[in-house]
Length: 294
Image (tube, rainbow, N blue to C red; front, side):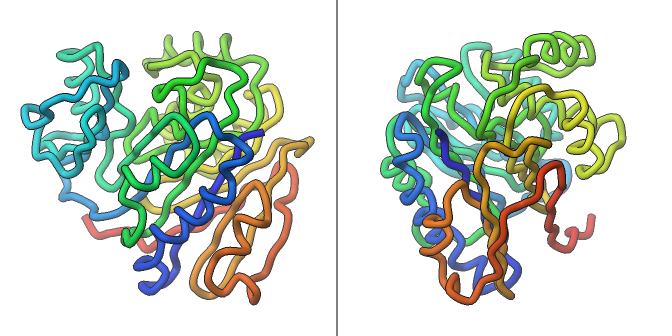
């Protein structure tokens, strides 16, 4: 099952309405995956040399997050904090000092929120309604390969500003995980989708562009999948060569959106005039905003 939602804003008007659009899409997809929901949004980019960390206490404990940095968002067991550090180093430092916590994402633009249950609570906790952002990916999950918990929910982020949501299943994720650990990629769960995110992180660290990394995934990741991937500057979609998992894309002059079902696209403004198509197997689709000057 599982539901995937992705939204990329081309215009300022679409950026202003992004949160409402993503909330409406996740609401439509809740029936595909009522066990958990998550979203990664890209907004309010911080200055070079600083980072935003999305943190989770998987015990559900309400924490005082003020000791971790400048608290940008706080919902008790989860928070987004700003720190004066490189994103990757900030992730390492937090996990070294607080191994009981999870870093849901680290970067200059990404903010990640996850919740168990249907999307309603997530939409409220993430403050999606009225949120301005450049792009976002979200997921509603029917738990199959691992237990229902916040930490096992999508999206998964293993590198700076990179995150992934996945509909499908990977058959060789254990062997790939072992290989990636030898290459210095760390994991926080046993979910196969986190392995897919880790694979892309590794390829990008090797110098690949995102499109090349995704083509590598077609060769190295065994199974069936639809991926939606977010990066600092854009959004990409990939289906495996068999393409048995559903996916629909729609595009207007204002936005590009992707979902597991057309009904999640039909609620978007201007959807009646959108170009709608099914992404081809083994073909990378990507969109990017203008890079922000360093």
